[in-house]
Image 1 (cartoon, rainbow, N blue to C red):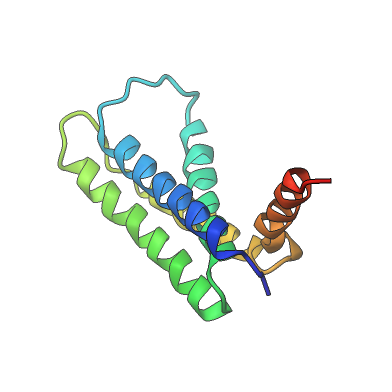
Image 2: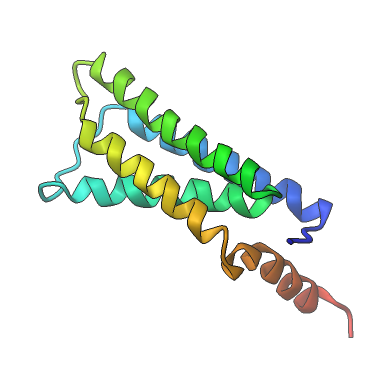
Length: 132
């Protein structure tokens, strides 16, 4: 069980929501990125895995963490449909699958001791900022 300080928790949440905004914006703006065929699937997997893992570290309870991962997977589905409505992005089911697999992987990571990474970072910050 993670014991994040309230002071740092606000920062972690702000960074998390910044990542969500970045994924939404990058999903909907015109981008001319030349990736090797299907290399973008790795980017989808990493993005949604990072989101699910990040918020999994901040939220207590496996059920809540799972709901968050499902919400991110659904966000990926919604963004793909929105991309299909544009004339500069494409709708791809494979992207939806990569998003969902990434979200599931992020949820899985949040079930391991790695879920304490932010707590470890807070301890390091406190140790470095402590007056001798």
